[in-house]
Length: 304
Image 1 (cartoon, one colour):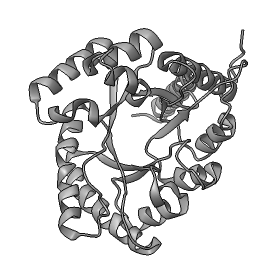
Image 2: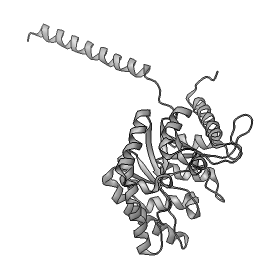
Image 3: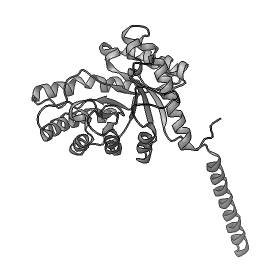
Image 4: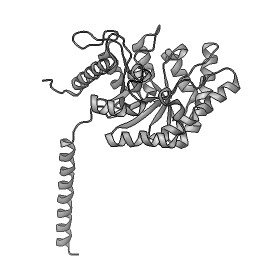
């Protein structure tokens, strides 16, 4: 190659690279900005309708998508308790969700024993009782199962016992690609500082938290959410009641959602309506509107 042709080649190559870089930057500038967070629907929001047989468990995905336009759902194991190993039934859940374009995000697991039980045999039984839900969650394409960290004893004893059960469950869930996440759900688990201590003791990449806005009881909810967020793999936007302007009356939703997003969390926030004054579907709709309004404010979207 002559000196002239070499210089010419380098000039053209440099120009092409610059043009490609400009194209990439232009495409990035035009790409839609991801939302501050995404909204899912927890099945517990419809627990009365489900218990009263007004709707069937298999219809949950359709209600979420068709009535509320929600594209991700969070199951509660008690509504298909005997179906965890029923491949045909789980296949039907998959088919219905896929037909609707609904993502099955997680399974909330209750009634399977105390993962921090002081009796070693019972603790092992509780761990193994959750295996079927890990396997079911895998079949459904979920990211995680939500568990409870119930125990008994002193503050430190319960921390050690719960950490033992959780670590063993995480070791089972890891090869399945599933996370095991703990909700503040009564007892010491409703203390953010205690749950953080448990997370540190478990020290497993599959273990995380699910901060629930409503389950702190005598513990400051804002402090608790802030403490749990560094370990959060899901968030539960618990709601109870609303005023005439659409604001939640029992907690400061904007403050809570700011804590969530300030922690760098951008994933699913599950609507979990638990109020009594409004019917369940009205409560879900009110929670959805409030979360959408807060998200629009965060995203800088002009309201019409």
